[in-house]
Image (tube, rainbow, N blue to C red):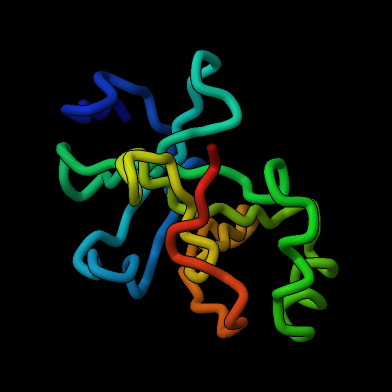
Amino acid sequence: MKFVNQLIGEIEVSNEKVIDFPHGIIGFENHKKFAIVNNTNYKPFCWLISLDQNDFAIPVVNPFLLIREYHKQFPRELMEELKENESNYEVLCVVNPKGSNGSVTLNLKGPILIDYIKQEGRQIILTAEILSVSYPLN
């Protein structure tokens, strides 16, 4: 299906690429259908675009590409789940391009988990005190 997002432009999204978020994303619970859009000009960053509303897209990134030790803050049960399904899961963090003091930041407290086999996503809250909702990238 063709989809036009006001921020990204026109894209082609196959049914296999649609990711259902049964509970939405924190603060945007009414958005249930998303797709991940990659743009080689902005790697490793990509967009999580809402298919429910054409003017909504969230910049995201795989945090392990930027912070190698991030997984140490995950609960053991979650790590076991991710390891069992390693090739089918992706962990993404929301990027805030206008973070505190004008820096680009990551929300490390609320990662988004994508299960590509089930075509389902969910956002979780990590309780580790060391994690920040506005971790500076620069």
